[in-house]
Image 1 (spheres, rainbow, N blue to C red):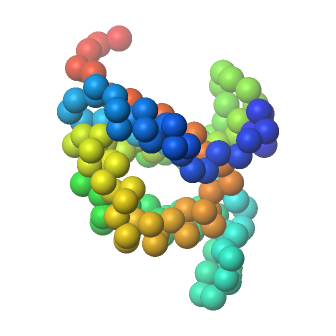
Image 2: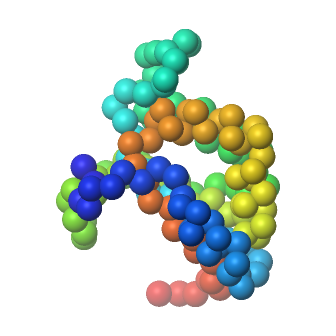
Length: 140
């Protein structure tokens, strides 16, 4: 259950504009926090009737990898909240690196990407997506 009520799935126009107009240069990394539907919620059942939300998202992710000029840096299943609101019970985290913000925004306009969104919508109950920029690696 999302703590603040809104079930985020899509970016706002303002967030797309802010990224487009930002002065970010070089690679960007998108940090995804994802909560899946228990059962995928397709508008038309067709061949996807018995899929879980995670299975539906996997179909989307496969297309994302094919279409995007990005790469999955890491991904993991969430096993529990250690610090933070317990109501924010995410199932999956993923960090995807793109060569630039322009590559990411171009991907969002790609017709194949838009077609794959049906699986994302069917699989994702809510998500948070944070724009990050890689820093040089250092020891803790």
